[in-house]
Length: 163
Image (cartoon, rainbow, N blue to C red; front, top):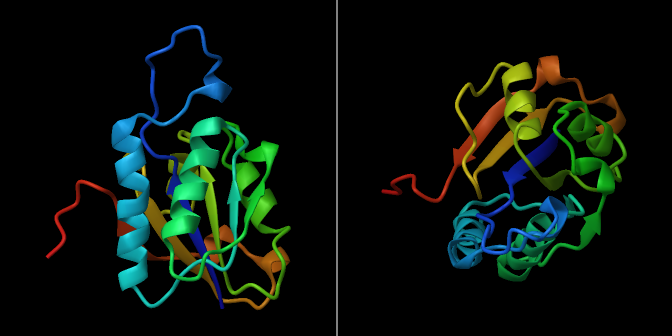
């Protein structure tokens, strides 16, 4: 079984209009959201063993905050392919993951994340900033993952009421 954590980067800043989109950092809310979501994952029994993030600054900032907060402190890899609108990049990156890892997190952007979740038929809404969806695949190899067989087992976002 493989578990893929899909996380949208935390809330970014638009304060400096001269910055390229790729270079936008997190805003104060984003710096609060990312650790909050990692703390919620700490309360869950399953955590990512590795994190692969988009090369955008806001995604890398999110990855660092999440990794620092998670109990297991997973390593972070940066993949420029995740800085895209296309959902196919998520599958392509996931298929390259090390099979020693049963769990992995991809931190990326909308619309790619929304499109991916819609394609697997699991989530029709907008995944908010810092939102996390976890899908499972009945396989022992990342190369064999198939969106048709994916199952959504976890969905959370910062403003969701936790009981």
